[in-house]
Length: 254
Image 1: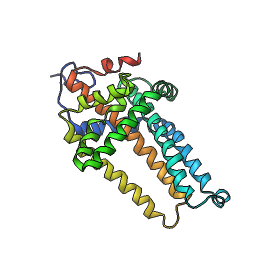
Image 2 (image 1 turned 90 degrees about the horizontal axis):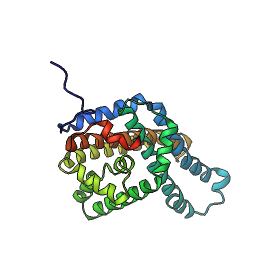
Image 3 (image 1 turned 180 degrees about the horizontal axis):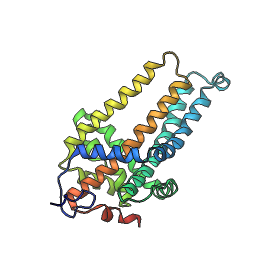
Image 4 (image 1 turned 30 degrees about the vertical axis):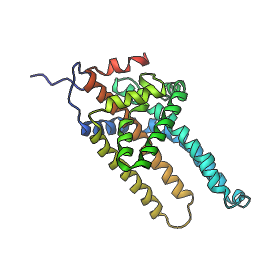
């Protein structure tokens, strides 16, 4: 008896398994970890260097007490948001290249990320606003919004949709599968928080270079995995709902 077709090339609706999404996301990340780490790490290095310069002894002495918080929320946080959204788009494209059995090129991934930068930024910003608004109302609406919008990024990159269309597409694809997505998302958020707190606890005293470097390294790993997970989840949801394989899904890149 021949083996059943992979979900990558299935031509009919198949069952959705969150465990398989998690495992395949890790497999894709591990196969191209160095490439992802370089692409994401270089981008995330920019706010790190800006923060280190702002906190350097030569500069810190000229900074008023309230200026540090204003600088963090007014400059560093927006910079991190833009770069995280951009690198997320890069990793999504690279993950789809791996799924298609094609070489993962940092140059081509960067080019695709640049071509979708504006809609990706707007979609990411609107997604963040809705999730924050949901959590302000109550925990449950926030979790539902987080699950409904989890594949906004790949919908925007792969299908080349506008921000609003990407959000609508994500809500449609996740319909019927949101509670498993909520469970995984909450577990992932707890893991990110625990590791971040552990880094801070392992290096007592004022925040210095070692802690910032470890935090940067963890942000690179967690950010890369989150983007790969979104890409794999998006693919599997489309395979389940539409019964199409990876070649049809990624045909927009050709």
